[in-house]
Amino acid sequence: MKAFTSFVLLLLLLPLIAFSQSPPAPAITSTPPADTTAALAPKIVCPETVYDFGERESDQVVEHHFVVRNEGTLSLEIRNVRASCGCTAVKPTDNVVPPGGETTIQVRFNLRGRNGRQIKTIFVQSNDPETPNVNLQIQGTIVQGLRAQPATLFFGRVEPGAQRMRPFEILSGRGPVQILEVGASQDGMIVTRLDPEPGDDGTRHRFELTLDDTLPNGTLNGHVVVKTDQGDGREITIPVAAYLQAPPSPPAAP
Image (cartoon, rainbow, N blue to C red):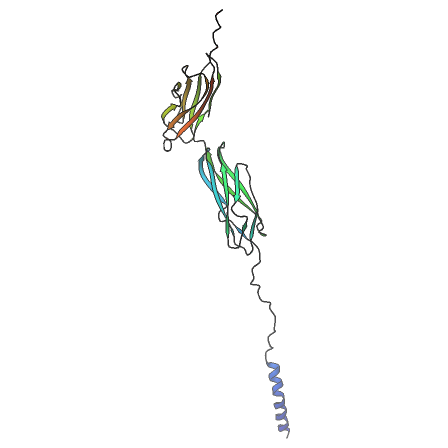
């Protein structure tokens, strides 16, 4: 009887023992779903931020178009574009760029009167919240190519018996140059080539212009043309201006 009672108690305790030894159920946690929606904002991207035009002569104008893209999800507004120098003109093609679109910023740099290394900055302001300001640069080296010194031969009022000669030079900033031909727009404008000075290396050529007495009195507007071997026979034109005064009339006979 005692053994039977113990057997019954064991049967009753088996479920309790099995339940106490089973592993705990995993905790249930709630993880919010990842936000897959991109932030709504414009995004300005400039594939090229520096343009180097190399070496150019000082009588040229450099133009370049910078590409501006909108890789955002809202329209990009170009609010302001300005340059660090008044000699540089800037203008965007479009001020509003839709998502996925692009525009260009035209840069025009006048090299006249400048020499040596040049670096000009273009400041671009937009409504991009992360990059509201973008700087672009145009740079290069300006060399004094072929030029006349002085650039104009001005005699002013030339009285009878006054000197009618003006010296001038042809200078090359790109190495030696040969003079192929020299001429004037009118007969009586006589151009004389002078001998080179010691140390001249072919980058400097000296001349004199003389106004002959055979020229008519009054206003003289002409030019001297110097043809060289630089490039495709590049020519330099030098304006000439003078007023040739007539001699006074002899006094009337008494």
